[in-house]
Figure (cartoon, rainbow, N blue to C red):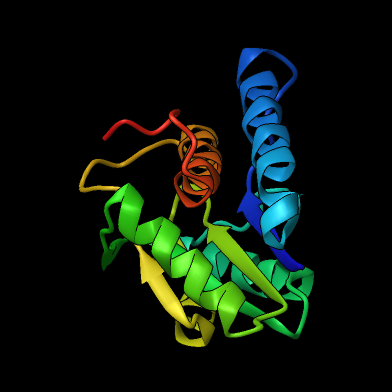
Length: 161
C-alpha cells in the first residue's frame, strides 16, 4: 500500500470546508484501497507567529518536514510547479505505486508560501494552476483530485473529462 498524506500550514475550522475535505479523502481511500493506495491522511500545522515572512516560511518548512515520514516522496504545491491534467496526475500516482514508493506527502504552505528548505527537499513541485488559492481551498482541490485519480485508475465513470 502506498500512503498518501497532505501536510499543510493552517487549520480548517469546523464546517462545510472540513466536511468536504473529509468526504473527498474518505472517497479516495475507499476507492484506492483495492488498487494499493492508502491510507489517505492529513497533518495540519499552525501558522508561525514570527514578524518576518522569510522567518515564518523557514519555521513552517521545518515544522512540515518534521511531519513527513522519511520514506515518503515530497510533492510541494507551489505556483511555480508544473501543472498536470487529472489523467496525468493519476498516471503519476500509479507510476509511483508501481515503483513501490511507500508514501507520498503533498505539502501546502501557509499565506507566505513554502520555505526554501522544503522546496529544496521536494522530489517534485506541482501547481494547481496560476491562481492563488487559500490553503483550505487548495487542500480541498487536492483531495478532490486524489479521489478523481482513484476513479480514473479504477475506470469509474466519476471522471468524464
